[in-house]
Image (cartoon, rainbow, N blue to C red; front, top):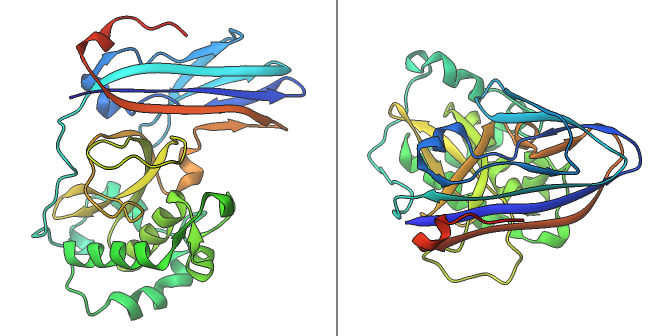
Length: 277
């Protein structure tokens, strides 16, 4: 199936301000792109591109004083299948894990593994290792937290989520990631597009989404404690230790968000025709 994804975002800066933008699809989706994935910046300014340590595609620029707009409109081909499920997936022993997964066992800015290890073991130590344990974590997080956009807070950590029992998708993800790491399961934070494909539409405005991937039995699997069901059309933009690694726009100075619109919708083949902003 074809899915149209994109955004229209405007920031306002009082003075020229350096920025980092992480607004492309993840390079692992390169072969699925059927149209676009070109970052438009207005006014036009010089940009330089680099890949961060996780392989996320990033750009650097200096935003002029006043408004700056970021716009993209792409079409990708998705399998149309829900997230792959493998209840038989086992948990790798730490000494068998690939080197590149070990960093996703460590504490990070929003995931206080050292502070929550006793809580995690008290909750999940009796659950069989592997897929069942990760699913139990997702079950607990989904029921423990009340979703509430009005109580979103960008500084909230996993421990604070556990205590306050309220948050948005990033908070669900931070808590689940932290529990996994406490139990020696590598887990990485993911962000990207997730539309209402195959499920009832929600009244909230479309936003970027957060979920996580757990490393089980030699590969990464997607888990989503917020939505709590396998979903169709999950399209990755970036991954890292937590939300600090995948901030889609970072301003190194005062800034104000003026517009934030995101879209992700199934489309027909006519969507492959060029689209202008």
